Image (cartoon, rainbow, N blue to C red; front, side, top):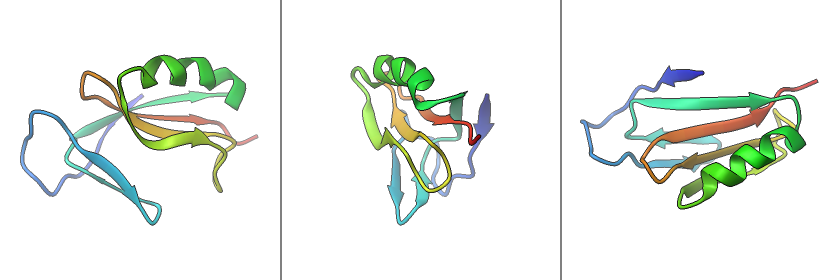
Length: 86
């Protein structure tokens, strides 16, 4: 799944995405979302995406999900990876 993200800035060649106090701040105009059934299911995909990436939030359990992580891959695409809540 991909979704658009409201951005305060203009177009930039490489997006910057940060998380602060549980809020995402970004210059990207879209994210790609990858959801699996469990942490074990999404970990291999996360590991592959993380090669050469800038990790915004490491893949780990969060208050709203058994697994949540965010990174910008080596091509400048921001990914949100999570596991569905049972």
